[in-house]
Length: 292
Picture: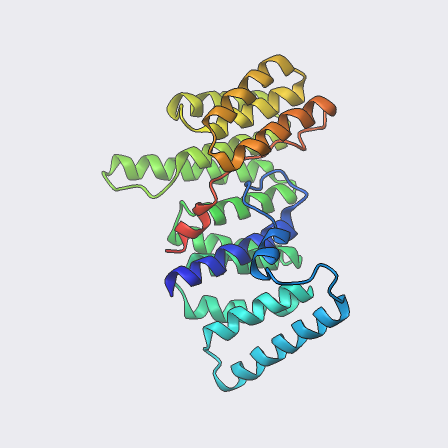
């Protein structure tokens, strides 16, 4: 049951994350909403009537609502209602059932992250930031919450606040290590996110310095190599960038190799794209692991 809950969380988090943050380059390479729906409805006809599909979703949503009138704590119905309303485009209607799921599952941070993402998409930036920070108060290394709050701050044109947030997280990790505590903070991912904020703030030299530091500390990790390649490509240093793309492709898991090669060729076709191709890939299991 825990595995099913985690799979639902991962899929739903990605749906809203992609809907809310598609225009930014801070998203991990994790999949797409189209892939998720295709995998969840393998027998669906590509020529299905959109009106009929919408009617079916509305019927599903109403069914879940009726269940919740009788059993307000029924988590299967709450999850189903969230899914149905997302597919109907009723993001306002997602808030209520998500708040209930957060209340029923205080130890599952992904519900709170999804709630924060929803509030962010609806323009409730204060509510979103508060929810992200509540998660981080309990789990300072939660990458979903860190990335969400970082994106929010960048969207608000507050890159220095985002930089401060991530630097404080790295200080917390150092303090935990000094105290002999087993740190649950992935400092490599935090540094990559920090470097990306420097890119967004038009400070590529600081980003590259962080990438070099991370490459030295984690030589088998393809992400800093790829990120540095993208920054150099954007700066016009295509020769060095191509060598790094090749290195990143060699280091990367199989599921990322084609995407890395596509990034390298896209950059050749459209140089100087203003950093739009700069992405921080992050292994897909990260969201699921944080829910356990």
